[in-house]
Length: 182
Ligand SMILES: [Zn+2]
Ligand SMILES: [Zn+2]
Image 1 (tube, rainbow, N blue to C red):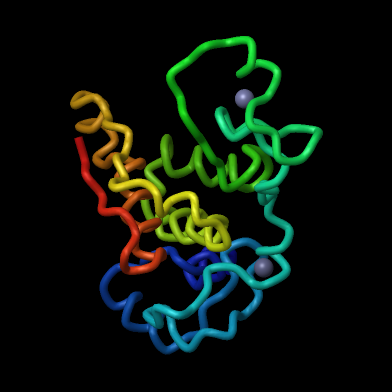
Image 2 (image 1 turned 60 degrees about the vertical axis):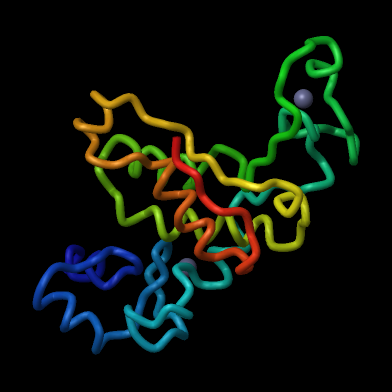
């Protein structure tokens, strides 16, 4: 039964006839398993998570971060945190969509080290959602995924950064920066 519920969960891509069966069934929230409002698994408008699970994610507050390194700050709107003020380094700006804890950490580890490639559409979409009210991406020309060493790429079978960039781009506005792999 547990396997069956897991199989129904979005966005686990079922193979062959399971995929066909899956189209007749409603998508379930990837985190808590309740039935989502979308029509079918293949409905591109279907969300991956129910609204409760979406709200519970550790979203970063864009006001409370260092603009240079992206770390959480106690005071709002800091151009640079204490560490960045003391260190002279070449990173102009950085952002993160979520705090690296709870379910986000679990999903990233599953994607990177346990071959759970199907998590990339979910994470890319969440990343795009976290940037939807911000214009900072507009000033950049390209999205460049971090390259993966060829030996690791052979072992893993995919570059998780490229997958995330692809699904991030897919959920951004049409005029968003293009992806330029290395
Ligand atoms: Zn849920
Ligand atoms: Zn900083």
